[in-house]
Amino acid sequence: MTKQNREKSLKPLDIDETLPHQISAPSFEGTGIKMETPFVNKHGVVIGDSMYASENSPLENWTDETDPEIMAGDEWVHPTNDIGWNTTENKELLESKRKPKAYPFMHPSKDVGKGTD
Image 1 (cartoon, helix red, strand yellow):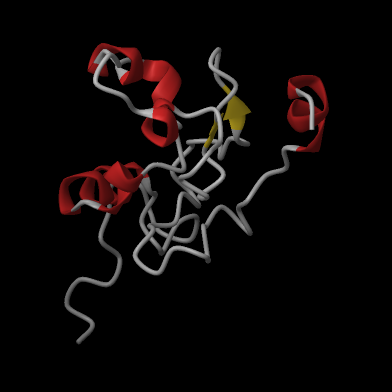
Image 2 (cartoon, rainbow, N blue to C red):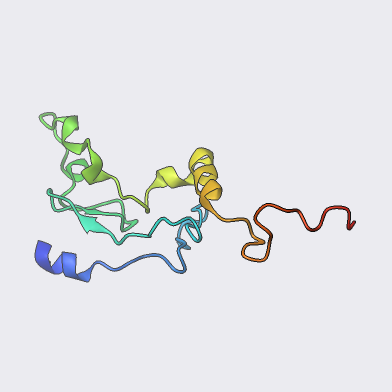
């Protein structure tokens, strides 16, 4: 498959702003962060497809002469399908971006339920 054909065949992996194929992946629903499709970096490696092995990857073609710096930078990290989102800190970051579950039926500044229990 050529790089051009591969780029055309890349499709979103999310379902309702979640990644169901990853058991611990958080939901992006209600965070304002848009799920992004996989992309092909300048080395011809698909990033964000959850396959983690690519015939063009330096990891699959490592030699004593391979400079590890080749795999540094943003082109190796997918913005929404990255293992880093599964950390506690990043899950908390997503949770802090969500509106309260009572929204839009709660008063913005008054607790109308106070004293009712």
